[in-house]
Length: 147
Image 1 (cartoon, helix red, strand yellow):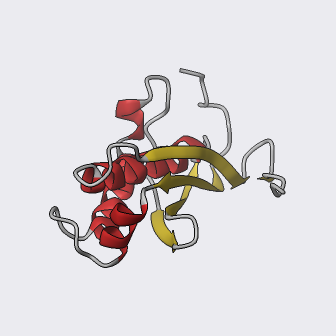
Image 2: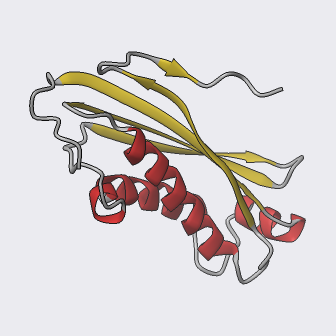
């Protein structure tokens, strides 16, 4: 792990995003709350929060940090039969929370896959990206808009 002991504690936030694409039948069942395993969106939000909290156990060189907040939101897009998962993490620490936000998105996306896989084995998890991070030595980063 990188030594962050001499770095000052600062306020840090990060937002990440990912997409889960399903076939029409699976998307309709998920959107209508008719999956046999239950409320996929609630499970995904909880899985994302838990994943963020466990990042240092999953990513070998990530520092364990105390998170002040984690939010996970799922936005349904009927036109593309997809769910966009967005996670935002924040802390006051010596190191950033980008890995926690990315891990939250990955965990939520995997939970959605697990909840809907009985209806669609071809589900795709795609484009897990860092959208923004604030704080620390490098300041603010914002992903450029995709066209």
